[in-house]
Length: 301
Image 1 (cartoon, rainbow, N blue to C red):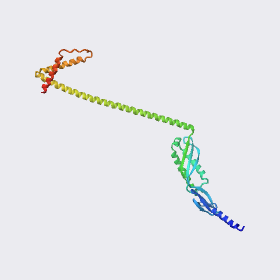
Image 2: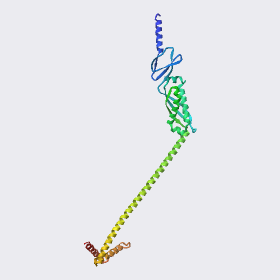
Image 3: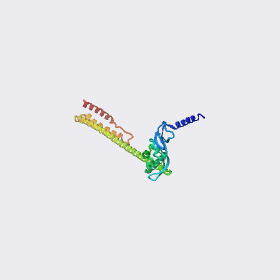
Image 4: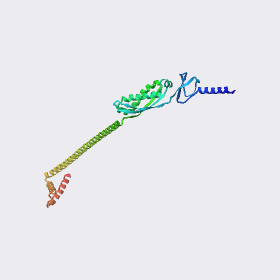
């Protein structure tokens, strides 16, 4: 019993030290109140307070947090009912404001995000709502971030997880997309057929140009050949005429043999000719040809 006061003092000291010792975890900040009034913020680590006078007010997490926004129905600008679901990422940057400027921070942020989702989506038509997800996220983020700035909260991201139209509207959109794809396919098919027709027409045009060019070249060569033949014939006629004027019998035989050979060629080329009888004078034609050779040799000499 003599040691009872000492034991009481030891226990009281342990209780006082325990009450004065506050260990704040990393990623959190606590507010300290004295007689119900805020005095300072306790940072992560070991902190000492006045026991039985100071007390912990609010414990805030200063790491980035996730707020799940409950699903809700929204009416678009073209009177289409859709169901939306979103998620919000935020971080407390001012512990004092987050503790004393708003009563229930999480509930206030949920209602604020839901209200702005209805405001932003309600001003859009359904097609724009489904195709501009990034625009919607940025617009809601800007509005909510400005509204939560007095609360000491920084909104880092707001993501619309899902926008679900009614089933009948989804079926109508699917049919519309199918019709649009078929229309594009028909347009592409028509474009392909038109391109093919153009290519075929260009090929035929090029072929006609090439054929005309070939015919022109052939006509030019044929005319050149006829010109050379006519020159040769004129030269031969001139030589024979000169020989006749000088009284050369072989020149006369040349003309006779030429006409004789032309007549035999016409007889042999007749369609109704089955048998060709050569006259006995044919041997004279050969002699005339030999005489022609001698004529040209003499003219050449």
